[in-house]
Length: 77
View 1 (tube, helix red, strand yellow):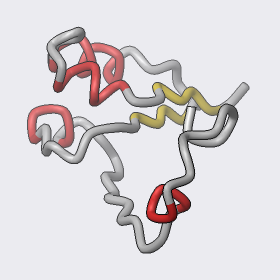
View 2 (spheres, helix red, strand yellow):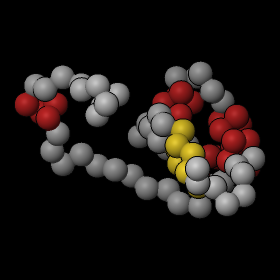
View 3 (cartoon, one colour):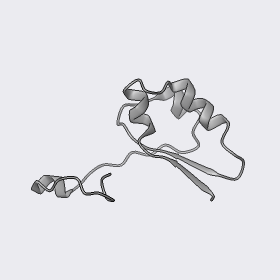
């Protein structure tokens, strides 16, 4: 594998399940030649972000939730 995805890890920080320092250590200890992707939370984490090479924000334009569609296994979770 070349990509490690820590899906929703920033929500874990927001909820207090992980500390910012634990995530920073994950970034610092990322294997060389591997990409690490952190997802979750719209709360900014400047201490984490300063250790990242790239920070982006995704904005919903349209989603099935808007029509009352419930979360779908394999798509939203």
